[in-house]
Amino acid sequence: MYVCLCKAITDTRIRDAVIDGADSLADVRRDLGVASNCGCCAKCARQLIRQTRQEIASLDEACQVA
Ligand code: FES
Image (cartoon, rainbow, N blue to C red; front, side, top):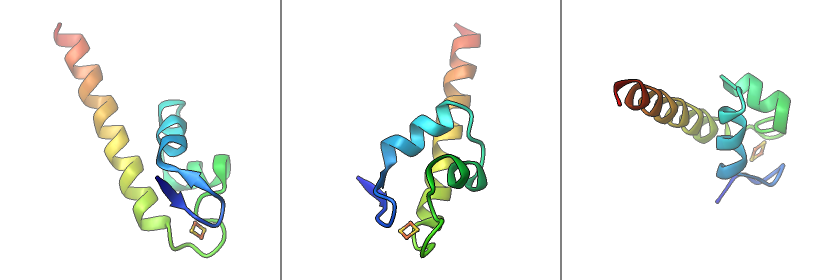
């Protein structure tokens, strides 16, 4: 789904950016242009970044346990 309509950025692209090392909205803004125009997508993008980081941390933890 589109998160940032101004820049036509999907949730998948934001998730991929986080997997590739983006750590914050500032990073995703720099890399993809998210929230660099009207800013309406900032809250949703920030939430998606946080969620993706938590998923990555959970996977890392699960892999260390196994
Ligand atoms: S919807 Fe993302 S900057 Fe406008």
